[in-house]
Amino acid sequence: MQLDTNNIPQHIAIIMDGNGRWAAERGKPRSFGHQAGVDTVRRITSECTRLGVKYLTLYTFSTENWNRPATEVAALMGLVLTSLEDEIFMKNNVRFRVIGDLNRLPIEVQQKLHETEEHTAGNTAMTMVVALSYSSRWEITEATRQIANEAKEGRINPKDINEDMLTQHMATSFMPDPDLLIRTGGEERISNYLLWQIAYSELYFCDTFWPDFNEEELKNAIADYQHRQRRFGKTGAQIEEGKEHKA
Ligand code: IPE
Ligand code: IPE
Ligand code: MG
Image (cartoon, rainbow, N blue to C red; front, top):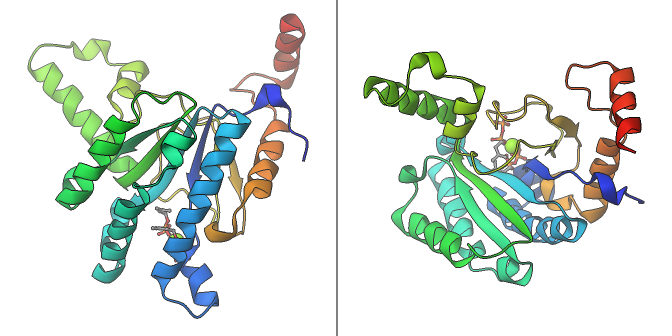
C-alpha cells in the first residue's frame, strides 16, 4: 500500500468496536476480546507514530458502557490499569492524555491515568488520547455549564459566545479536530463520540473486529481518506484552484 506522505491525517480518531463478537466467535468470554484489543492498540499506536500521525484518539469506554454487566466493567478497568504499565509510550515517544468523566473511575485507575500523563508529558512524536467514561453529550453539557458559570460571574458576555469559545471548553481543546474517524466492527454509527469535533471529519467504516484490525487495514483507511476531496462547503473547482495556487 503506497501512501502519499504529504497527506497523512494529522488526527485519527477510532471507535474500537467488535471485541466481544471476536471473542464469542472463538467460544471465549468477552474479556478475552478486550485483552486481544489491547494488542491491537499497541500495534496501531506504533504504526501511527511511524506514519507521522500527530494525534490518535481512541474510544475506550463510553458513558453508556457503564451499563454493561459489572464483571465486564471490572475486567475493562483492570485492563486499563495493566496496559498503562506498557513501555509503548516511552518506546515510541508518545504522550498520553485522557478525556472523560474521570471521577466515576476507581481511584487507583484515576491515579494511574494521572501518573501516566505526567510521566509521558515530555514525549513529542504523537499524542495518544484515550476517551474513558466519555460521551460527547456529557462533554457538551459540561462545556455549557462552564460557559454559563463564567457568564453568571460576569467573566464573559453572552454576546461573545461563539464556536471558538465552545471548542475551547471541550475536553479536546488541546488538539485539532479529527481528519479521519475510523469505526471497526461493522456498525455504522457514532455512539456518542466527538459529535462537536467530527463536523468535517472523513468517516471510514470497516467490518473487521478490532482485535483483527492491523497495520494494513489502517493504511487502507488512510489510502481511502487520501482519495477524498475535502470541500468544507466549497465547490470542487474552488478546491482544485486553491491547490494550483499553492503548487
Ligand atoms: C468494543 O468492543 C470495546 C468496548 C466498547 C469497551 P465491544 O465490547 O463493544 O464488542 P462487541 O461490539 O460487543 O463485539
Ligand atoms: C462504542 O462501542 C464505545 C467504544 C468503542 C468504547 P459500543 O459497542 O459501546 O457501541 P454501541 O452501543 O454498539 O453503539
Ligand atoms: Mg460494541
